[in-house]
Amino acid sequence: MNDEIIDVLIIGAGPSGCVAASYLHAKDFKIKVIEKNTFPRFVIGESLLPRCMDHFEEAGLLECLKDIGFEIKSGARFIKGSQVCNFDFSKKHTDGWDWTWQVPRADFDNTLAKELIKKGVDIAFEEEVIDVLFENDISKTTLKDKDGKHKVIHAKYIIDSSGYGRVLPRILDLDKPSELPKHSSIFTHVKDIHRPIGKEGTLITFDVISTETWLWVIPFSNGVTSIGYVGPTDFLDSFEGNATEKLMQMLKLSDYFYERFKDVSFMFDPMLIKNYSKSVKQLYGKGYVLTGNSAEFLDPVFSSGVTFATESALLAAKLITKELHNKVVDWEEEYSKYIKDGVAVFASYVKEWYTGNLQKLFFHRPENPEIKKQICAVLAGYVWDKTNPFVTKHNRLIKTFAHFIDIENDEKKSVDKLKNKKK
Image 1 (cartoon, rainbow, N blue to C red):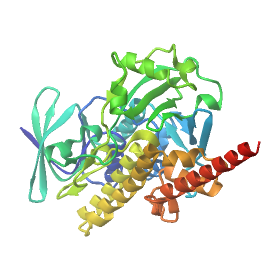
Image 2 (tube, rainbow, N blue to C red; image 1 turned 135 degrees about the horizontal axis):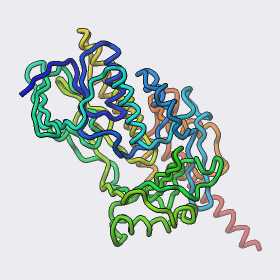
Image 3 (cartoon, helix red, strand yellow; image 1 turned 180 degrees about the vertical axis):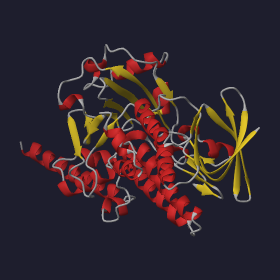
Image 4 (spheres, helix red, strand yellow; image 1 turned 180 degrees about the horizontal axis):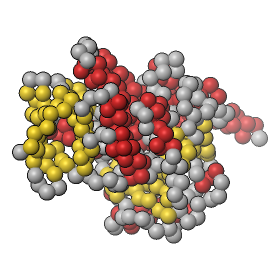
């Protein structure tokens, strides 16, 4: 069995793993990236947030992505029947990037991985982690390649960026139930043959069917569009037939998009992910740290996945750099608390979306420009900005304003009743 000794082992070559690897490689550490799959490969998480642009830039990965020509995402649209709410990332409370991308992740992740290889990073594809042991200050990770051969990697640190694979949570029994509602999703890609010309054909849109059910439409620059429904698990289970038949039936729920997609061909059989929200007991331990979806996976309604993946990866890489340079790191304060604070903000928005409170704020008219700017900053991924009251008071401000809207609506109804009586 071949043994290899390195500084940092990174599990997963998605955006999280690539950001961590690029940063650490630039600091001259000996690193290795392990990826179970071959690239390119399909994965969801196709809508980015402006905040992650900071991470790609700092990790030296921004220019290679700019060269590809991915669809520009300058905001997001939410529709509910005849109601429309548009968020423009250039009109937000927090300074920062005012655009990002909508990306087919197979191409996006492959671009990152190829750039790392070009930089000289060691990426091993089709190698799977089958066991991890921690002995004193060194981890021993046993890998199996596509031919079934085993080898052991000795590393001072492991960064688990395995995403949905959740390697260390599974091996170390770190998984715990998510506090978010149980929702599932069904999705595919289509050749968008009826895509409107101009801005309408490029907009990422969330079509709200009911309080807990919505359709995503994410156009890419290559003529392909990602479509998918999210809703309570029992709701998705109520549709009969195979995955294709289910999604075809569900498309009829969208008055806005049905004509556009009713006769398109699915590029692959729709995929179904049940009860997708995940959580863990802890984000770090002696010799390891969890990043991105391997740590916490929230509901996709606000596209937070890649941003948390790259935020946590870059921070983990910086803290490991400090520790390998013999500086003291308070992982609880500097990593766990920081990441959990950001997750808590987005989790509040997810929970209040499904209670209907946040939807009341989105679709209330007339709009309050200042409130909209503050919410827009959160939706852009700037969830650590303490100058934003919709960050610092995330657990109560949405409820408070929704309550005011309810009172206002009740008063309007009372006035209308009086007017009708006088008639």
